Length: 565
Image (spheres, rainbow, N blue to C red):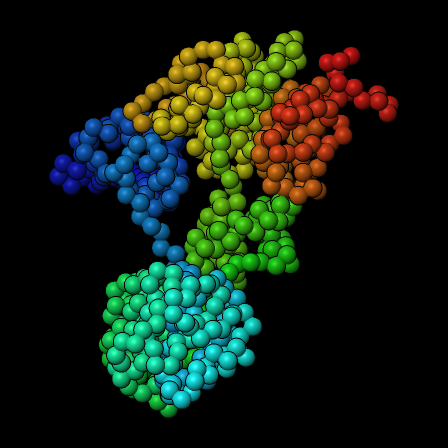
């Protein structure tokens, strides 16, 4: 069937939903109602409509199992009380490598390894990681390795480790001669325990202690050397989730340490030194983009997809890209750019990171209380009242406006246009469903804003969530609209846009304020967020504290408040 597949296995109906189509929603809901027991899988579905949510709610008493591979939908359904939901992590095959950021790296070697260690350190990028070097050396060498390594790194402090030393990121610790080096908690401990594998310091001793401390955030690297030190610790490293890299033996004169390690089969990669360096560069790369890199990337996004983020606040947009990079473990910024620009699905994943959807009912109650006073004067003589909630996110604010206007006796004359550029947020907004556990916070804000009625009367109450009443939902019309790229929607009496332009730079903020000015009738009201500044000169402040402004009448060089004439 179009949009979903139904397979019956005994008493269990297995339903796979791969697209949400209006024409098949009724059939899907009917299938859920008729099933005694069912498993439903949502694949690549970011949000479900209210009708389907309510159908799932009605069948909670049945033996049901839900799974999805979309994190936002998984989070949403769990908020709605579907605790048995199974989230299927999406595979992101950017590379076969483990790309999580390593907090600890240990490099172990013996004969011929010092040269290799210096070459690796020369290539390492600056990073908040700790590096441990365990090199077999003669007692008479008097700990000369640390001074040598300092010549080959400009990003890291190099120290010969000492007992009870606190571990710091961005530091290289060299195991001293004739001591075993172990790591416990945030400290290095040196001891006089006997040799292991005929070695002190022993690579195996340090590898094992680091694996127990850092688990999957640990990378162990074995370089050239004689003997088999390190090999007997690899099983522990792997069992605890760490990564093991063995140097390609053909690069070394002394190979026994490497061949013994390979024989254990407890390793992830056998790399030549050049590839070890490349691997570490990618694992340690931190997406701290230059201004030029960021500008070029945003330019390409605008060219390819028509979304213009070029005038967003640089710190905000860089932070969101860095979060996206860490979340999906790209190997480099080049890899991130390629994936995003070549594959719209990856762009949409990143786009969701750009959008911050944090809202609540009657947020900043004092602003709603003051707005109610102002609207009582400015809207009382109006016929049809048109309101724009711009950047509405998941719609708590437009529904708050609907409640406020109903209590003022104005809702029947009102049309509320709610817009956002995020499709998924708009789908969730249309549902008007919110976790029941948040109701008390909503109620407190409502009372603080001057609400006089039973707040619960504005909602249908279910076991784990609440839904805004249909009479209120019908007064809010949702549209996709991009404040950066799209134009005037209509002529409004009120525009409500809070905590959106805070993410724009000065140029874009002025452009959006001009859009609001052009979209308001003379005397119309603009409400901004508490941290947002109105630089548009054709507005006057009605309440500076609560960021409520009015479009003024222009008469020559004079401006005046329409209500003060």
